Length: 340
Image (cartoon, rainbow, N blue to C red; front, side, top):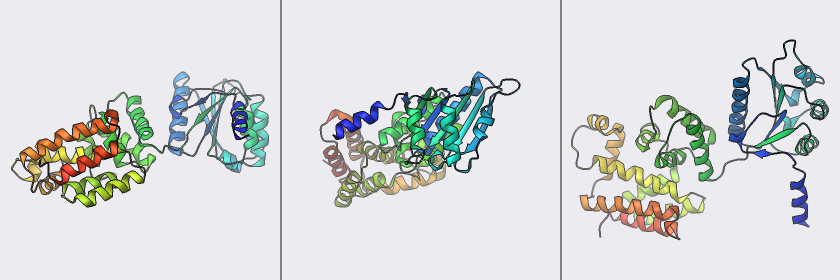
């Protein structure tokens, strides 16, 4: 019975359901889901696309929860010069009865050259309207903006931000950036925009470390810090806690890589931290931290760990069956400062 009900529910969706970055013009665009960052991005992309097609686009905003009868019809009615129109309706999940009545009427007879965006964050309010739209009324599309929970999904989002701007970001830099802002998609989006605005050229690990070295993901860098300090047991406990809480092994390896590579840059180099920071492309505090981390390390051990990092990176990306075991092996090697 459950399977039958699920199949029946799916069959009622007769319109295209697209990802946030696949938005395209349609008379009715239902933007659903709880992830406001994706919804705002999709709505902005659609506005820019419509404006590129006709700069005379008229943009209007309505709040469905404070709506009065007739407002939608007035905004959608043809203008004297026939300019295209975009009507953005927010808070449809809290819509007034007046809005639901007008919207149900409108989707049965949409206005020419008019795009209406219905932003619905979730819940049962407005279900009759959503069912009508999803059944095909209004020649609609649905843009689904569900919460991004996996690191891979957040990496796809960040990669799309750079791709849309015509810029490239190195895979390791992308992982480090997501690790720094994995708890808040809005902050991740803002970080992407800052890098695009302030950092010239392609984005690499050094650039991400320069801007966001202090905003690393706690779980990944807690493991790395404990291991580098030689606290093997503490590092393993932190690793288990991170994995059990849903952390992806790939960013954890990325956290190790950021710290070990910084240590390798600073190893054996003399001079004031401020001067070295400039020549090495680091911040002064990173030089000081790397020098503290290097206490007790030797050339051979550091080289051995760098080789192990590459092998572990491949292991957590599919080269081995057990990525957690590969991480535990790396933690042990680092905690022993790369000794045989």
